Amino acid sequence: MKIIRNTILLVVFLSTVKGFSQEILTKEEALAIALENNFGIKIANNNLEVAENNTSIYNRGALPTVALTSGANYSRNNQSLILTDRDTGNDAEIAGNGVVAKTYNASLGVNYTIFDGLGRKYNYQQLQKTYNLTELQAKETIENTYLQLFTVYFQIARLSENTNNLSEALTISKRRLTRAQYQYDYGQSTKLEYLNAQVDVNNDSITLITAKQQLNNAKRGLNVILGSKEDINYVVETEVDYNTMMNYNDLKNKTLENNALLKQGETNIAISEFNIKINKANFLPSLGFNASYGFNRTENENLINPFGAKLITSDGLNAGINLTWNIFDGGSTRTRVANAKIALDNQQILLEQQKVNIENNLKNTWENYNNQLFILTAQEQNVLTNQNNFDRTQERFKLGQITSVEFRQAQINLINSKTAYNNAKFDAKLIELQLLQLSGDIMNIKF
Image (cartoon, rainbow, N blue to C red; front, side, top):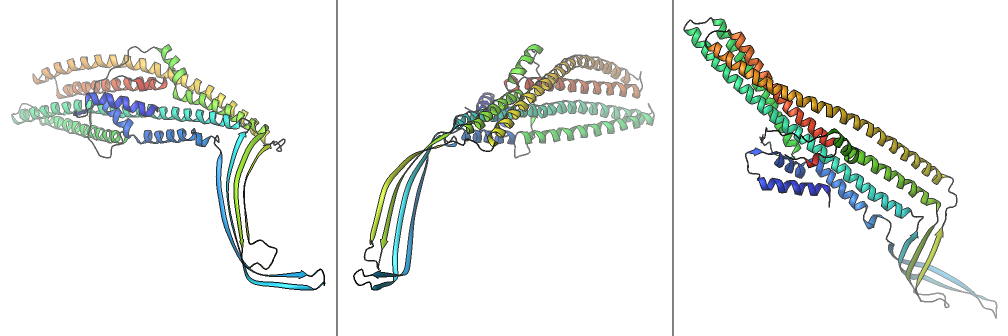
């Protein structure tokens, strides 16, 4: 059964259990919708069907060919015949106008190649490997869709939390503006305090509008990945769980064994090896069988030849075996074999290059992942520190012990720390997904 169909059935089952009627689009639901409707996956599925058709018995040359031919001819001619009398030696002419002849024929022929130098066998094995390659390409498409989907999904989650933080900041700035208005009206502060508060409200409003625009853009991008024809305003989950059981050596072993690109490289090598064998098959003879059954009928009207037959019919069976051995074809087969060997060598070199690049990418991503987890912990502590600092600053501001500039700086520090924490939280998860993709394990992700 196809890998795509298996994945869709599994995820649809999981999402059906949870239900699709929730207000929040869960990760399971998003994945189920994408696997069902994503355009790239649909194309990959169609390509897999084509590869499966190519491996069928109808495309292997394993079956005989049967052909039926038939025809009919009509002729109407003027004829003359000169006969010589043996006794007298005199010539006599017999002539006829509009002499009609009708001919009918039909034939049923069968041809079958008994042996073709094993080329048919190797061609079938190559088609099977080509199917495996298409299957791996479909798997890579799904893996890329996983990563693309969750990149946008977590981007929406990131922007949603950032928007909420900015909205809270705007609320605080508006309360400060109201306070400044009252203080100015009652002569407790200068107009400068009011104007500063008004500028900060405007800046926070602009920042919030920009964040909302980015959020809406990300949601529209999610609709494209999900293959949705409608502009649905999804609300996503913002909780993130991390795989704390990751180990570099395990990841490296899984990558060398399961990485989609490496598996495709290995399959391409196998296809190239069969291509050499297919070309070498031309050095061997081929043996074929043919048989046919034919029927012919000729009708002659208005014969001018007294010795001619007015009706001629024939039918019969013909069969034979033919052996063909192209002993020397000018060197074209030898050239194709040599080029096929070079192509195999190139595939092997390419695989080694891919191994080096992917292993290097794995090392960089693993180091980046661990650094990001440290940054996440540090940013979490920064949020707690800045929140505590802001709460104290706000109390002192209400008591008139600090200026609005100091209050604003504490507010900005809190906004920046929350934004940095959100970025670190979702960046770490996306890097983790990249590690899972490299190791070929992203389709086994657990939410």
